[in-house]
Length: 148
Image 1 (cartoon, rainbow, N blue to C red):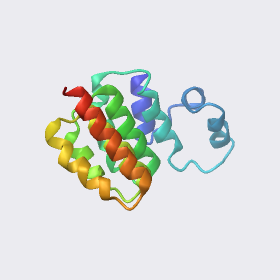
Image 2 (image 1 turned 180 degrees about the vertical axis):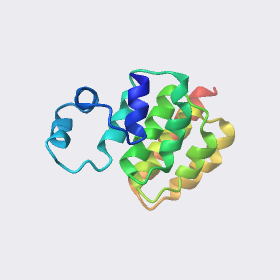
Image 3 (image 1 turned 135 degrees about the vertical axis):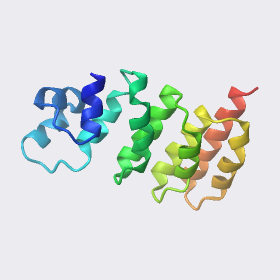
């Protein structure tokens, strides 16, 4: 399962059965000829929320550099869920051009960061997007709760 999820993340064809398993009914559209876009990579990454092996760490962290914002957003979620050592990468992702990615990075930094990361999150409290400010506050709250 892990190897096939990583294969999807790397752009490989892991077979229709696996694509349907991780992508659900939406994968049928891809199999029927809809544009593939970033969906298989996203589905492979999302599968790592449910199954895990440390061999996936590097690929998950690397997903923060993906051209597709949805993949970057999912990468932050997996990092948070798995407690991966990606503070530097998440801090860089706080400047992403897509607000949803900044929100997800702030929440993830709250989950895996340390009190030293609070200043990075505080900067987002002045973001022009209200949802980013909320995400930054959630990240700060999570950090405070973790280190009480």
